[in-house]
Image 1 (spheres, rainbow, N blue to C red):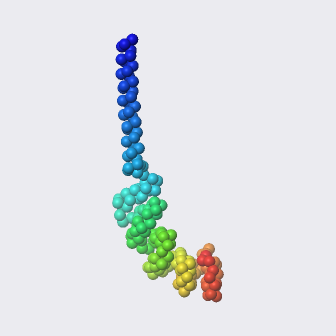
Image 2 (image 1 turned 90 degrees about the vertical axis):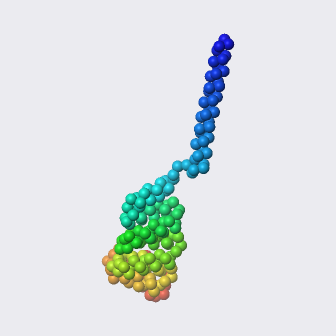
Length: 184
């Protein structure tokens, strides 16, 4: 019986030690998660993946565009703008790259910069009707009626049969009459 009591005491001590070690391990994991931020969020992972792609392909405008989108989703506006500017530098004739930068400027409350980017793009790409349409809309929203008119006219000259053409004609007519209609 004395032998059984000794074994039981040893087993209890071993179980207590093992439980203490396990508890300490769990506590260390919890502390590490708190200190180091735990796992990467989904948007953080997107940023990491996009950064890796840009590092592998630094001259790929689409990769920079994806990095801009990932930064924006992660709430890093300035980084998103910087990445979008790089995408435009790499592909100054691709409207999709410029439209990302314009959207970021508009969403961050910088319509003047968005308009300036579109004006630069339309100077380099005078045959892009979509860019003129967006420039007209932004200029109208910003109260730059003469620029809106010129942009809408350029759009209609380039895409007279586009699905938006009739709405743009109505906008132009209202602008010429001094009205303040909503952009198409």
